[in-house]
Length: 149
Image 1 (tube, rainbow, N blue to C red):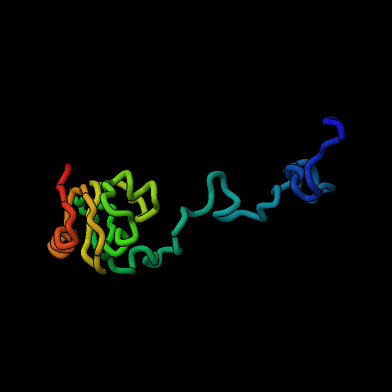
Image 2 (cartoon, helix red, strand yellow):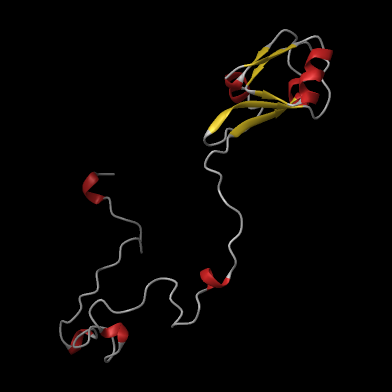
């Protein structure tokens, strides 16, 4: 294969429409825009979402919910996910993401540990927040729950 023999796949490239080049081309005179009217004019047509004056769908449907700009999104992990780790492991935000124990979230404010499931291994868990059940589960298993910012 030589570089001068390479060509795009069949149908990958289409030739440009040459408008207004005589009636023999099939796209002469009105250049494919028909006769008169809104769509034939310069800058003609309507904006996206315009429904001919009828109330648009985007305005007919009620608004719902809001975005709290002060809200914090935490990376959440349950104690059941920590149960199969070796004893004495230090679990923090970085450890959770590296080992795929939780999904990363946008604008995260750190790690939050919840108490679903049971924990039988003594671990040191460093997180921004703990639920009451998670904290008691970690301490009952002989581990420590440290709050870090």
